[in-house]
Amino acid sequence: MKYRTVVMYVEIGCFVSCLCGWILVSSTLPTEYWTFSEVGTVVLTTSNYYSNLWMDCISDTTGVSDCKYYPSMLALPVFLHACRALAVCAVITGFFGGVLTLIGMKCTKIGGTEIVNSRVTFSGAITYLASGGCGMITYSWWANRIITEFNNPNFRSQKFELGAAIFVGWGGSLLLICAGAVLAYLSGKEILPSCSTQRPQRPVSYTTARTRRTYMMPPPSSRVTLVPPLYNKGMDGRTTRATNKTDPTLGRDSFV
Image (cartoon, rainbow, N blue to C red; front, side):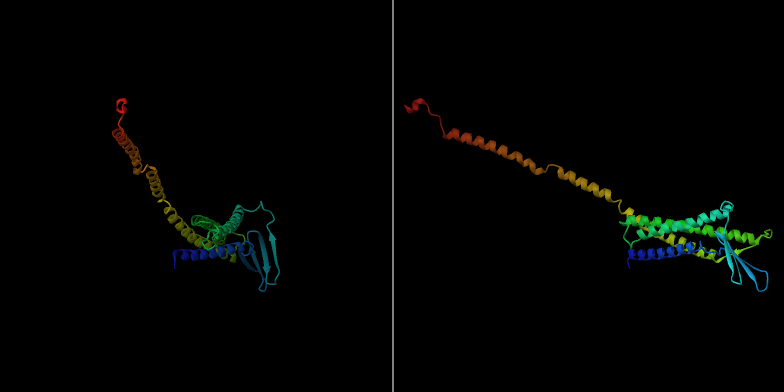
């Protein structure tokens, strides 16, 4: 199997992995189970509290559930605003990374030359890495805060545990980072040989210029053009001598 075919198949696998990771990261935004807490007040009645970046929810064993959005945006802590911004950036950069990778892959042939395709693919891989990094920072920061509050004995408020959305986000971010790193390595490796092959073009142009210079020089056969005038002059001298010998001058006494 040729090297180009292997690289093409690896690029397709990395693109599919990054696309799955981006879908997983995007699915965590509307999911409510970022934090989870269970409180059993009565034997037959248990209340479940869960929340995410946008709302707080509660449900019980009777099937009644209620969700409420955060009432004020400015009253929220800076931690929550930063997590929202990072999560949205992860989704947006992942989308543009998919577009760039789809254009620059070898199986699509949309970008143009090999160098242009490699550069576009490298840009898409870097965008995927940025998306995975934003997602990993968001979920790790959220999980660190929840674990710190849970293990703090002086924390008197209700303690929460990690929800399912955190683990899904970790998996999606890990797929984005790993597949994006492999894609960046392959595309960067393709750029270097193509650039190195263009360097020996200077000697070629130099030899062509040199041949043009030698071609434009006057050929040595042009010196022969001076021979016919000399030869003609010699012939003219011989003919004049012959005419002088064959045609003697006659005086007036000869006719008499």
